[in-house]
Image (tube, rainbow, N blue to C red; front, side, top):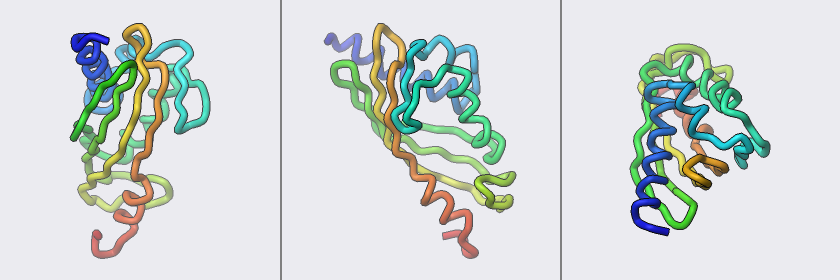
Length: 140
């Protein structure tokens, strides 16, 4: 695989995070995923609208939610990255009332790219750590 293709694959993953989280651009998400996109974290095939809908509770619960890549690596048809999300807890999330706390949580995700579109995803996001932080009286 050429370096140009590897760089294009990384750019696609970054653009996907921009579309899903930072800018919230559902039309872009629809062009980024294959019709047979499979999310291994969810254990099922998902269409673009389902992917967009999964992000809605986070966008509603955390003001100014954004994500950046701490590390991004591409090899063959895979892109792997470590990401950090930041925002402010403004409304209930997973049964936790609004805390007003600034949050940072991390995750690692692998993406498979086929013909310039995302066809598979594996993700480990530290939602358990985020819940512990939000439930803590002292903020830690």
